[in-house]
Image 1 (cartoon, protein in one colour):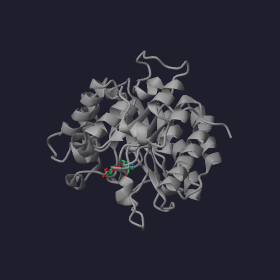
Image 2 (cartoon, helix red, strand yellow):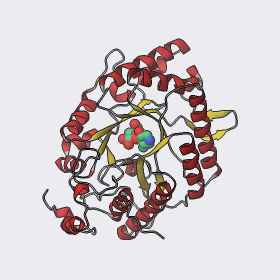
Image 3 (cartoon, helix red, strand yellow):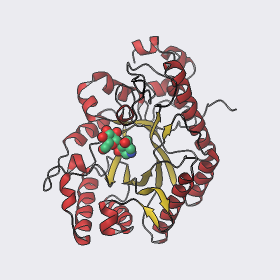
Image 4 (cartoon, protein in one colour):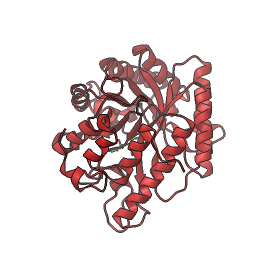
Amino acid sequence: MRETEADRNGAMPTRRELLRGGAASVLAGAVPGSGSAQAAAQPIPFGSAAEIGAFREDARYREALKRYCDVIVPMNDLKWQALRHDRPRFDFSGADEIVAFAAANGKALRGHTLLWGEALPPWAKEIASRAEAERELVNHIEIVVDRYKGRIATWDVVNEVIKFEPEPGAPYRDTIWQRLLGPEHIEIAFRTAARVDPKARLVLNDFLFEEAAPAGAARRKVALDTFRRLKDKGIPVHGLGIQAHLYGEKELDLDGLQHFLRDLDALGLDVEITELDVIDWKLPADPARRDKLAADRVSGFLGAVVAAKQPKAIVTWGLTDRYSWVQDVFPRGDGARARPLPLDADYRQKPMMAVLERTRRGTAARK
Ligand code: 9MR
């Protein structure tokens, strides 16, 4: 692998320096389990969501995916909106491109997502009865999971089902699935995915488990209650996807998070960090200062996570600040570009990348 301009210019150690430190397999994009040279303890697999527009148009983006990722997640192309824009016909074009790229480059895949109340095609509003909702949901999951059976190892079976601020008796979001099927929509989705691909790892993916406000604790409780219910009913579920869209300006409830991780462990569940980035709209403008604060936020979060429970993977929601939902949804008041990700808009490594590397290799500095 060539030393790139980014290595030479970035604030991070050069590739040569990292190699001296024994990080060769990471920079070579080594895939855990592929038999490539690795340190004795396997590093936690690292990955990113891949956005199809950037993936198609930007060769540097594809190179970055090859170089840094063990795991790739199609960011939007497995959502209903992408697959089902035409009700009778499935359109797998975008997902197939990313899946083929992953296969060609020896990357694992996460599937995102089989059930969500958002990113639905307009026709979904026409689904009117319980029977129709169940038929559509089961049919969708059967076809999608079957197509990628043996290729997509892990599925975010349900995404963002927990109510933003859950209340007693009202744990789940008001979505078309919840309205027509009630809480059973979660069970139907997991049961169907497991039936079609019994070897797949099946995950419930959601956010704000690290939140210090009361909603954080309430959301953790709903997740645990949901898992207990699924387990009691014998429904296969393997883990929790912790999205981790971290707010740069907010202190996190790391004690609450660690307690939660131990509770999940006691239930026999894995965790993965699935959509990590830092929402930096309230952080200071100076890029170096902002990057440092974002890296510190990620370091505090991941440090607490690995101290309580080793995640199966750490996945960021994009790789480069050039393309991120944070820029669109949380624009800064001063008009400066958002810097939520481990590479800057010119693909230079930021301090966050060093934190990710240290965390996944278990070499994070102890406080
Ligand atoms: O980053 C995604 C953006 O490109 C899409 O327009 C949006 C709607 O499909 O979804 C974004 O990704 C979301 C993910 O699927 C679920 N968790 C929150 C992510 C950021 O909004």
